[in-house]
Length: 256
Image 1 (cartoon, rainbow, N blue to C red):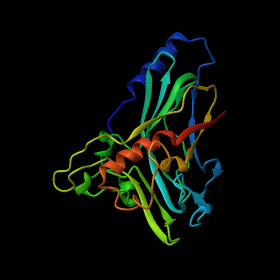
Image 2 (cartoon, rainbow, N blue to C red):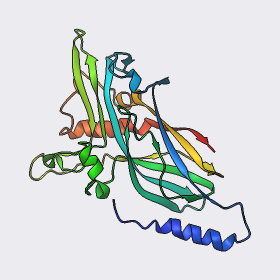
Image 3 (cartoon, one colour):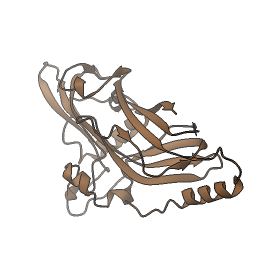
Image 4 (tube, rainbow, N blue to C red):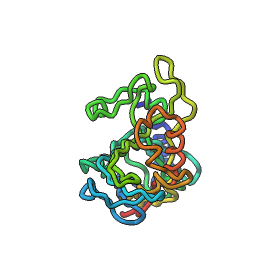
């Protein structure tokens, strides 16, 4: 990923050590991010996959067959407005039950932070780099669509108006127009998720919940009969996903 030395973090740690030589309450703490999933409040795990048990806002019954997505650039904003950004990423693979717990190697100073945030997907600089683990996971985006990596692969089936099973591939990438040798990008579609104020006095697990129903809900009511497959080269659909994704993630709990 981009070569960030976590300058602000080092400065914060230095200032903390200088101004609190006699303050034993300041310590470095380990953060762990836990990702849980639900459908309008009903818990979703891979044990619920391949079962037509979910109904979206448009009234279509669907099943989930695969779900995996990237989160990156975990950022802790101090009460004075300084950002400690961890230049990292994690593939949350609900299908295989991996990446649901993620502990960055970098610790942070204890204390209260005005906001904790992360990026859904990869920003453009990070997305231009080469990741062997994502390559092995076949998470790449074809060069004709701009290359880089998926932000999310959300696959399953839905029942059409005649109750026939049809496939959907709700794949989120960088929105692209003019696929081919010279694609162009009308709008960034990665986005920041803000979790709000959090206090870290000891090693802390932050549980982030994702309501999967929100991907199909608001502000764009998603009609799977119209938008189901071949969505990657559809920049309008990608922008709609970006808009709907704003309400998917929330802070569920902070456990120390």
